[in-house]
Length: 505
Image (tube, rainbow, N blue to C red; front, side, top):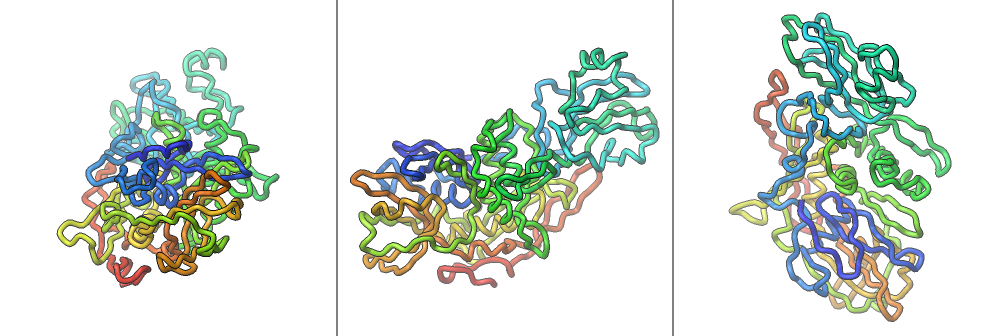
């Protein structure tokens, strides 16, 4: 993952989607930090023509925020038992962190305690509770119900559960001396008798339906339940004692309600637009895990008036019109060629293909580089379905192809009620555009009662929820081993480079 230098005088934000963004918004007359700006706004900002804004908006090239060709992606650099390549393998490692699981993820767990030889008693931890539950429990890839002599008990980490009777000890205190209290830990307690199906050590996997979170229906009313909505999972993570440690009173709940509703809207014939299925099980910073959540839904956060607002990069009506008389010191630049993609690959673990890693591709049917197309690959470990990955690939590709113009200008305090993410319409006779739409990606108070704005060209057509390609054909063999993923022809979904917007083939 690449990083952009901070703007001089700005506060570094939580990066998202395709890199680390730095953004400052104006709220209530005070400068406030922006947490990340996700796929669109982080891209908009950090990809801003590769500009290093600390150099007076000059055209000095900065590091691209989207993964550059040849750079390691997050799966290769993430030390995670869930997202490592190869077969999911039960661990016996005291240094592993206890995962926080959102949505639904296939996992192998970590052995906390074991006794016996011919008949084995084992405690395997999976996640912090309280989770919704376990399903599809397998021993050496065989459903546990089909394994002779196998039994189990499931614990969801509800805070009142007692330790399993399999654990040695006459009292709960004696058991806890061996394994800890485990009141808030989701685990499986197993009894396995050696036979032809299970001989020696065995591998245990399960699909974990993850943590219960607050889901708000109004700013003052919520229920605690399982959800795979990335916005409610984000709120839980932000307010988690072992994560960001905010409180719900620090959040603008209405903005979370609005963004969550957009994620839940039905697309692709009935499925949710964005879901999150993520095991936070490796030693990354809380901010880096926020990036992973933002990447699944084009999410963004901004602090304004002492509240954290979340918003999704989505179609917006223009909130304000500015005429040529309102604009001062206008500058314009364009995305350089090495940040305009010919092909975008999204790599993810697919629930539909036995949780193997596959790719969703979006490809322009007319390359800007005929000899060697520019390919970008991004890992989205919080995505587990092809359609969501494919739509995001299509979005990345089309944003780079059609939103290439950036502008900066100064205006009076009439824009004081605008914020990062707003869409504005501009008219300028020098550059020759009238009521052209731009998305604000940076605002900062300037001297002499002016506000300085940086904005990226806005194209409503990139939010059409179109698949970048047809689903892949995957031949899955036994024991989670897979043959090569064969991508089917998908020319009917690809864009052309003719004109400013999209022409489906």
